[in-house]
Image (cartoon, rainbow, N blue to C red; front, side, top):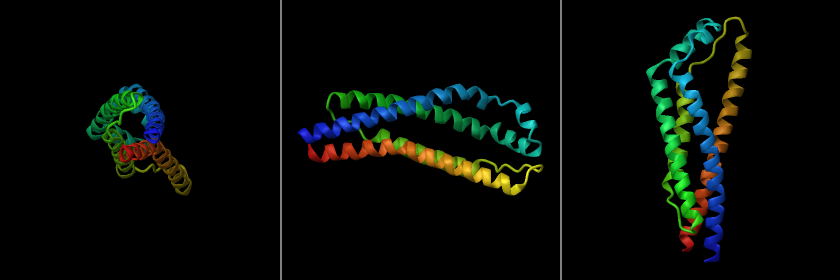
Length: 166
């Protein structure tokens, strides 16, 4: 029983980390939503033909729909993590599905950005330099997204440990 309590306490700690990270993500997504739904063409005109390509991508119905759906998923996850935190605070086993949803959402988000974001091709700059910057940016963003999955995985590990010991 003591080990179960310890596992639930660890799960609660990491759930709180995940709740804070997801809450910050929800706030930033909410703040950025107007710019996503109504992008300013002037911002992209500076980049010439590459900017036109990006503007068309950002202004597409698919990107707008994805942004709204992503915001709704993030808000739902904040609520689910909050409810899980209440259960864990009462030393009860929390459901595991919010963490699976979070991991699945993160994987879909990574795939969406890798597969559907247009490549930046600036004619005035050396293509090798642009390719290098794009590659580094992509790698950094992938690492950040994977790091944000770690708290969910840790919560799942502790929930499974607590579940098997009950």
